[in-house]
Image 1 (tube, rainbow, N blue to C red):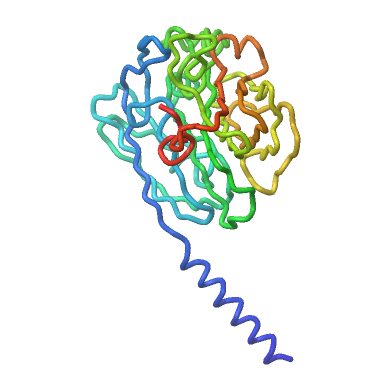
Image 2: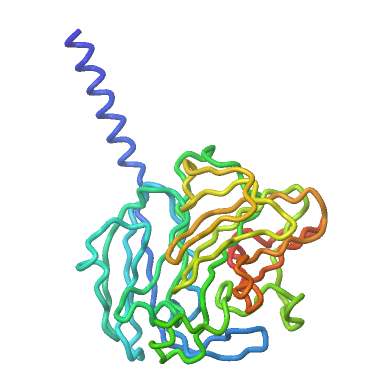
Length: 308
């Protein structure tokens, strides 16, 4: 019996070693840049603080168990220190999320232990202003088990945030005096119904499973995420397969939180993806998901999961 127990222990140890060897190391580099970015479909510019000169920042994609070696470069032209707080990381808030001065670099390493959709953002002081000015993005951690969730035919990232008219006015941010709520850094960015200048929509075919990775960047408002003329087939709080909910009309995502939402339309037509807090929706937080048999095969795949 002792020999059998020893054999089992050795086998388990070898399996553990094999699993450890399989973990990938992924190098992620972001550059903080303070630039002008458009905030509406007419090209109105806003003095943003960004990752890679865009709002939101790049979508980062890794797999559960991957080791992420992260480096932030703060562009030498920046006037402010910046940082990155990954909600997918378990690290030392003081050492690893420290502010990086203009012209300098900062690095840290973490293992992506939990699958899902997670928020990343600047944590430099005052955090509320750095996020409100555009320093946010999404990191998707795919589950190691490929059968843990139904396979999505198309995927889209939507990040909700508030627009404050004067990016230098921290007092308005603290008082929640926003003018618009946006998806992916633009007012009615994917909604030609409420803004004829909008040229982009999300696309899919009837019967396809569409997965929306939804992040609420805030900085203050909760979102009641709803698909007008549709029902969420599955909702996964934080995007974790173990958190599956079925057949929801709306689901509340708080500031700094995220969830993934699956939807399937049996018919051609459209859903309007909104925050059902109507002041938020009617000031800019509406995205049209159009279902047609000839939907663009590139939409919702590859680089088009966050439609720029």
